[in-house]
Image (cartoon, rainbow, N blue to C red; front, side, top):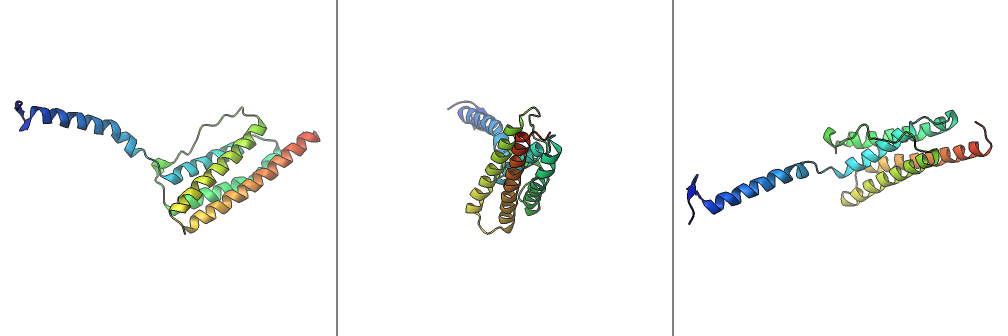
Length: 161
């Protein structure tokens, strides 16, 4: 049988060490598992920061209602208390040199992805009023971004800058 060290046979001691090392290596992965709504909130925050990038004044004004709707959707998630502060990314990295058309496409993609994340979770836990309210705010923000994109396009077409 192997030699005894701390009362365990040698083979068991090795198994205990290997499993302890494996558990220690995998612990950060299990601790960092994000709440499903964290991704949606982070997408919303990123879209909001892209919206706040310097635009033409008339486009900036047109995007203001969308910014307010995103802030309201984020508030709904925060007030629901489903996230901890460690789940949140308050200042996501964005590229400030992105062309205007690509900014609008990014905003729409991020809003649609956040909407999808919340809808997926709503299927798993239906009936939460904050989810419905957040989805309404996201839908309103999508309409406002669409309106701002049309205004940006029309301004470029008539060269009103």
